[in-house]
Length: 298
Image (cartoon, rainbow, N blue to C red; front, side, top):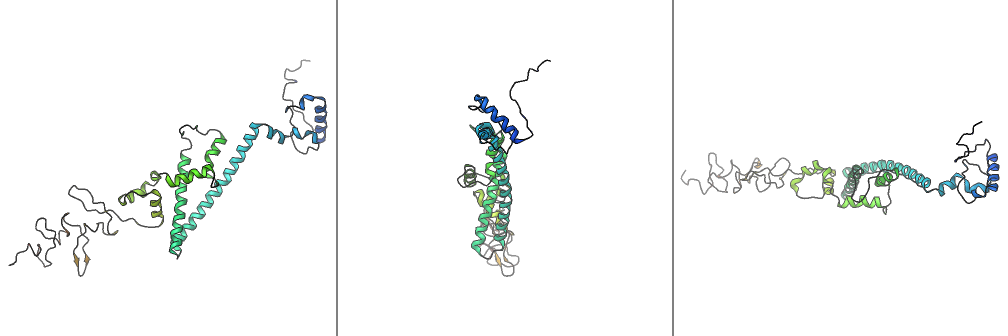
């Protein structure tokens, strides 16, 4: 009979139908094979071991002694914790945002409404930052390798979970919320308030969440055909106080037409027709000049 060349090669798997049977066999093996006492060459798989002499050879002892196994177990635990944290964060943040948003429009206390808008803005800014971090996971930072292993991915995804205030990932999010320019993700909002001047992107988000409708820019065109750009007086009058006709009628109120030129305070219908005259015409039918430039006889 020919013996297989694999006989006697490690590892050797010993099976038993009863726990006490395998324990008796292993105890005898430990007694006879002294080399096993100083090594980790043997692992008892399974529970319900009643013999204290075999505790050091249990699976749990192997987990604690093998760094690779311990690291893998830690990674799995971190991934599971991260999964639970992300779910809790998603539902928690959404519930908080909706509560703040409802309070911002229905609370009778003005201070409470203002605080609710601020809190809701913080949640939106944090979500925008986390989205940015999530999109940049595959990008290689300077001096940092792209996350490849589950452990590295779990570490990089840590900012999505419920982090303690002192956690590195939590500090990273807080720092970006305060200092990072998130304008690339709110271009539509920024375009609507570009004429307001330079604003922090968080202020733009707060303005949007508070329901404030931004006033349009003044549509008066200068001699170089450029728009004035100052804030309009209202949403239905797209002119600033400088370029809106100053004429006020008894029946119709102030005229909403633009001044006829930059030196005049009145529109074509109400301004004096004399060259460069800033005055209004005499309010008489058929009269097109002011009291200075009109004929004194007719």
